[in-house]
Amino acid sequence: MAADSLIRPAHAAEDWTIPQNWNAYTTQEHAVWDTLFARQAAMLPGRAAPEFLSGLDILHLSRPGIPNFEELSEKLMKATGWQVVAVPGLVPDDIFFHHLANRRFVAGRFIRRPDQLDYLQEPDVFHDVFGHVPMLSHPVFADYMQAYGQGGLRALNFHALEKLARLYWYTVEFGLIHEQDSIRLYGAGIVSSFGESVFALDDPSPNRLQFDLERVMRTRYRIDDYQQSYFVIDSFEELLHQTAEADFAPLYRRLESLSDISPNAIIPSDRVIDRGTQAHASCKR
Ligand code: PHE
Ligand code: FE
Image 1 (tube, rainbow, N blue to C red):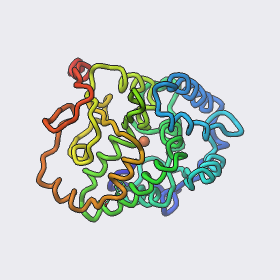
Image 2 (spheres, rainbow, N blue to C red):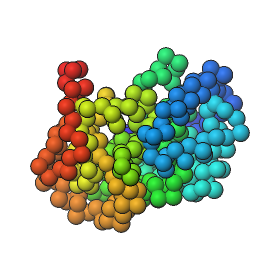
Image 3 (cartoon, rainbow, N blue to C red):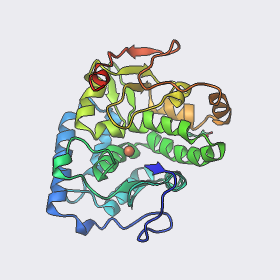
Image 4 (cartoon, rainbow, N blue to C red):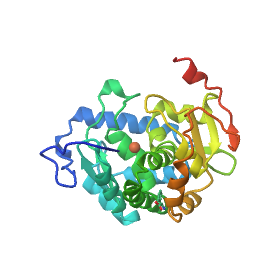
């Protein structure tokens, strides 16, 4: 996760990394990980993309509990050349992109409390590692994440970060993918959430729309509740092709004259898979 205008804590290195301090985790903290892991691992078969499910193997380390980043990085390095490094929380955008561009995934080291199993606003080690690392062991997705980091550094020059961040949100965090006859989950924010793993696929409330790069980059998103629209890609190869191999400069220019789209809207050019009732969002207002 990234943000602007943050002050680097004194204990963090220049690249904002800190030691994970794996030995400092308590038995109770490891137990929270194990509880969350067992719950998600049991519900995701048939829901998560096969690429995510096979990527889960990478999290089986020599000991149960919160993964030791060094041991995890060694395995991930062999699979796709990625590493996991600990950071204190949000890091500045340029630092975040720089790590991604160098195949380092930045993860929080703290874990939620036992009374926060279902919901947490800020990403903890369960979200960051369980949610993101399995896909990083997939070669095509691993390349996409690196290209995104490079694209992020480029977007800073174009002052187009808000637009590019929406791509991350609607793919890396909340993406869905077509499999043979069904839709599956791959976004880290969904697969690390018990409630949203059901909601994103089965609930009649949200829109499910065919992925379209320009459309996604115009779409605002909410950070306080389940998403009101999800975008469905056809394959990771196609996603990589449409993004990494494209020059975003003309797209950023075009987007300047196009209005933003609200999170629940459907526009005439959309290829609609499911038109949502939006009942979930309306009942809270
Ligand atoms: N190709 C994009 C650009 O020209 C960068 C990018 C790559 C963005 C992959 C997202 C994902 O800026
Ligand atoms: Fe995340």
